[in-house]
Image (cartoon, rainbow, N blue to C red; front, side):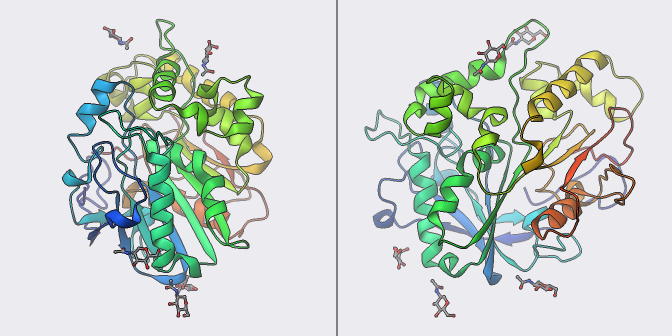
Length: 375
Ligand SMILES: *[C@@H]1O[C@H](CO)[C@@H](O)[C@H](O)[C@H]1NC(C)=O
Ligand SMILES: *[C@@H]1O[C@H](CO)[C@@H](O)[C@H](O)[C@H]1NC(C)=O
Ligand SMILES: *[C@@H]1O[C@H](CO)[C@@H](O)[C@H](O)[C@H]1NC(C)=O
Ligand SMILES: *[C@@H]1O[C@H](CO)[C@@H](O)[C@H](O)[C@H]1NC(C)=O
Ligand SMILES: *[C@@H]1O[C@H](CO)[C@@H](O)[C@H](O)[C@H]1NC(C)=O
């Protein structure tokens, strides 16, 4: 993933990202923290300022059945045997000041995802497969502490897609694994998966998450006060719209109002049907799209005062991990603020540079000509 080819907008056509080698956890240090297939977890570390760390959690969907997890165990999302090294760091992980003005000189870490349940499971018995994601995240943080994270004074935890969900689910845990007094802020990129139905009335995400929660036995590991408040329905606490109220450190939600992954998997729309929207020509299921946006804004409501938001009217998924989507799309949300990109808005939020809370909600499609189509 080190080249990004864009079909819209001339700049930048191809992005060369810095290549960062993989680090495997020592088996003796991993304390039973293993990928689905039993292999050791891994991360990529790009050294930078010793007191400032950005830790990004990889995404890549979930597995919701023994069969889908067994298949996943045969690839890099389930086994470190298949993870590529090096990998490219771009967008918010870039060490180029022109691309990543606020975090370029931080120590940057990309944590590989190989458990299939957003780093949440902790099942003791291996049933052919290992469900140990929660242990993986702890073991990785522990290992990073020995490599200098224990000297950090400011940390950004981020992730996109399933990693964006992980960011919401683990923001409190990560805070507890850092020294008291360390500033932690959490940026969830394309991690705001909502409980919505497809045109046929099927709640596809709810079904998927229910199966993930049950297979990986997450009733024991997800936020217990959330589960208590949800009358024991642990699946609710895998949904960001419920969990966001329990996150204690500052949380920033960066999401497209027309998140392309959710249009495909939550609304069951074909790629073609929404891709035609990008050219602002025809857009067949426009009522569905606006209904989805309305559901997302509704799910985001409640707790707005403590949340930072950047919800743009683009058809995209994961904007912090690419140079172009991190910098080019703009929202002109408030008369008093200039048009800002995700990079600017996240930087302003992290460093508290604006008087107003960062809550940028774009107009409804079609209105924003600065969106980028991902390859
Ligand atoms: C194992 O962890 C210890 C303490 O956290 C650390 O000093 C050591 O370098 C680690 N070993 C390896 C091989 O990573
Ligand atoms: C990164 O570089 C900028 C610009 O030179 C500087 O202001 C900032 O303090 C540096 N950040 C860290 C964490 O070293
Ligand atoms: C933390 O900083 C001190 C002082 O610079 C240094 O001696 C020590 O090795 C650092 N700790 C780690 C784990 O890198
Ligand atoms: C999702 O929404 C549907 C319809 O309101 C509801 O039946 C279902 O329980 C919800 N799922 C979760 C996990 O809350
Ligand atoms: C999605 O829609 C197609 C028809 O476009 C249908 O065949 C399929 O069963 C639907 N998928 C789900 C998971 O509902």
